[in-house]
Image 1 (cartoon, rainbow, N blue to C red):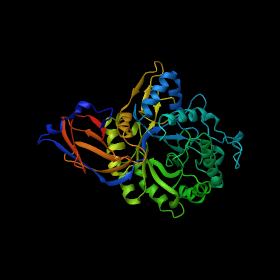
Image 2 (tube, rainbow, N blue to C red):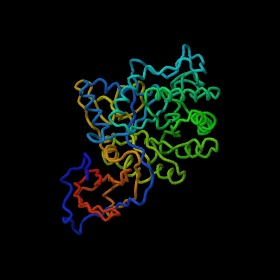
Image 3 (tube, rainbow, N blue to C red):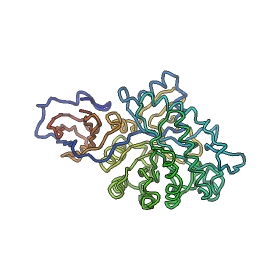
Image 4 (cartoon, rainbow, N blue to C red):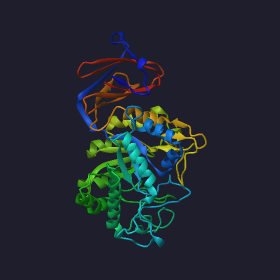
Length: 439
């Protein structure tokens, strides 16, 4: 048996120490639900800057702590912007992979250039060396400016939408990005076609997209491109708030697009996490949580909030992943350029003057699940006799079971955990505490 970093070995008690007041937890590995794809955050340019500011030894220590299954939190899912997001280097400004002089059209993508992201690629390879099972999700915040009706990476002027004349070029833009990742030995798990397509007037790189526009882009361009190139990357739709379930459903109902869609991606900034369960039950597609921080989490969110919305609650509803926003930021929630995000913080905060690394509750919550799950993991059925003791259970590829457990009450709980093989584990969980374990 292994106990997660937030649990303590002394929480385990002898098998004969149970009492009539024990809470009963039941786990059944015979009843599998959704596949678990991973837990993590976004590796923005801001995060890369903060990590690389550390001394080399401190960098190595932090990366091990974040991504090692043996020695750390075991994060295994990273969302990576294709070009600039709002959390980009304010000294260098916004960019795409195909900027042209005067925004002149370049349908053959002769100006395609990923040079600015070389430090990101190098960091991704270091992370992969620590955790070979890391999965990468790629998403643009904007198409190149010349592809858009307003000729601007941001939404500050005009019609901030993709010009239909450039749908084919945009598909080639994704194709070339995948090729650049492949050149560097980096496999891509999924493509998200547009970050927050319902927000078209942002002062940072952004682009509005209707369900019909996204369906057409997938059905007529992105899907055929992926088939032609034999790419295994999944296409995820939406990548916006829980309250936009109808938006996602409209894309899923398109007959040309639907065969190419591998899931729906949600952010936490508006609506309720119940959307995860509704989409999973109604559409029968994988549902990913891909971004959460700031205003989506009251005061940034405590451990219980993060567990409920990204791990335990969302997982029991059918969620395939749990993710924060930036992997690492400084003590001011930066660096950023024109960001519109209250209370933003990274999974870790790196003090810009001292280099001190602070672990935030979102990392603890996501790490509790990440440490004991991986490729081939499924959520399995579990139940608790006490509603104040919340849990989600997993079956791993090697046959081991894992459990994330949170005592939401103000009193300690004695727990008897049993599985379908009649194995008993006895625990005593302090008030307000969480733990994970594998057996």
